[in-house]
Amino acid sequence: MHISESAPLVVIGAGLGGLSAAIHLVAAGERVVILEQNTAVGGKMSLLQADGFTWDCGPSVITMRPALENLFAAAGRRLADYVTLSPVAPLTRYFYPDGTVFDATRDLPDMLRQIAAFAPHDVEGYLAFLSHAAALHRVAGQLFIYNDPPTLASAFGIPLRDVLKVDIWRTMHGAHRTYVRSPKLQQLLGRFATYVGGSPYQTSAVYNVIAHVELSDGIWYPQGGAYQLARAYQRLAEELGVEIRTGSRVTGITVKEGCARGVSLADGDYLEARAVIANVDVTTVYRELLPPEIALRRRRSLSRIEPSGSGFALLLGIEGTFPALAQHNIFFSSDYRREFEALFRRRIVPREATIYVTATSKADPEHAPEGCENWFVLVNAPPIGPEFDWELEAGAVADAILAQLADYGYDVRSRLRCQYHLTPRDIAEHTGAWRGALYGLSPNDPLNVLRRPINRASEVRSLYFAGGTTHPGGGVPMVTLSGGVAARMALADLLKAD
Ligand SMILES: Cc1cc2nc3c(=O)[nH]c(=O)nc-3n(C[C@H](O)[C@H](O)[C@H](O)COP(=O)(O)OP(=O)(O)OC[C@H]3O[C@@H](n4cnc5c(N)ncnc54)[C@H](O)[C@@H]3O)c2cc1C
Image (cartoon, rainbow, N blue to C red; front, side, top):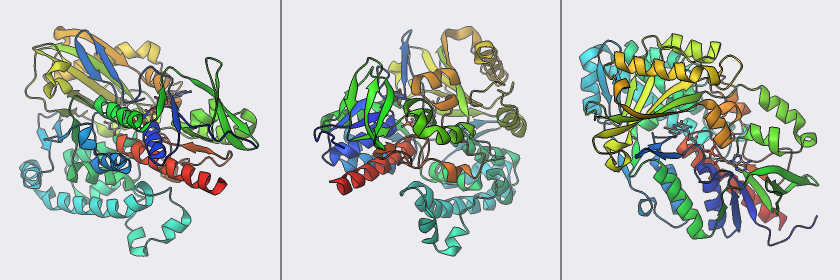
């Protein structure tokens, strides 16, 4: 079938995965157009400015710095020339209902001193857990994160003694119990399950790699706020010649003779494409963008798989400053197991939730008027479903969060200059995330690691996926890696076709 040589490679979506794919493709000499439905790039990484405040509305915990640096290096540039990443210390300040405050840190002697203060018997166990997580990262990282999607052949390429380290069949909590006895430490380590939208009591222990990535390698703050990272990717892409068309909603992918050959836009335009890279949630691609006759079976099977958790965020403009808060703060619920039962078995937001609070105005004072702070407050939420009606419940959830913070000594209710919220429905609408999921398929089912769609569509040639719902998964560094995988696959196929 004839396709014009001058037709570009089309990326649908300017989330970080889409921008990453575009950067890799343009760096390899391809012409690339990104079509983004919103007026700004970044997808789940977004920004709200109102009432003199600026809030990062999406990711705020940035880990795996080398994954970001490697994207810029692939284009012959340095990340540091586009955005400054500063190490965050402490990593996170944890507040427990009994009044304990614990600063998780990469500084091992400091970390061990704090553990010794409330759980002396767990000092050795914590060290053993860190070594376990580092070993897991070495093996599982090669299999599940840093290379192309895993296959039987790649699994067989790993020595048996290493395969046994890939801790798939236990739960994260099951593994934590074997290393540390303190419920507080177990709760702290269990929280990393939420980085992939799961429960520590269900998510496979292989995800303990996250503990290694954060507790040993650290968290980074992009100066000016997390959204500076999206701006950095955008600037690099545009400097290299990527054309980014915002306000361009794709309504369909045209398939001719089994190949993705173009896209239709909401304004009636049609754009021919030598290949299409979808940064949209893969389930949404099958449900909404591909012709039903091609994708019916896959659409049904993907729609049936439980997606990861979502989130409910409060954006608060608060009078006053709170020196006792660190950059990242967690206020734990008193019954972690019950909280996750509510989220993932009953699929509701628990009345008592674990609450994350960050205020970028601490590092960037211009994000709030003088004497004020810009709190971004996040709780876990189930993916959108019939069990929980956000239209009815959002106000009550917001009130419960504010009341719970008050119980912790942070009663900001009389100091609010402004208050906005973001529900899973808003996230779904803004980014196309199926059921508002933040991280693709649910990690609560260990088999979903194997069910995750790979970056090359199996039903349609010349169609590739980049982003959190494909390999290697969700989160800022992971989607950055996924762009590289999708681009590699597209370039290899284009080379074969020439
Ligand atoms: C509240 C929140 C907190 C988070 N916290 C963290 C964190 O602390 N650390 C971390 O690493 N990760 C975090 N994440 C997850 C992280 O933000 C995502 O994994 C990542 O940004 C997703 O990138 P993506 O490439 O999958 O694309 P997305 O961000 O999903 O973007 C997809 C893009 O495609 C566009 N699009 C969709 N449909 C169409 C269409 N039909 N036509 C044109 N364009 C379309 C969308 O508008 C969007 O811009 C958080 C996410 C949220 C929402």
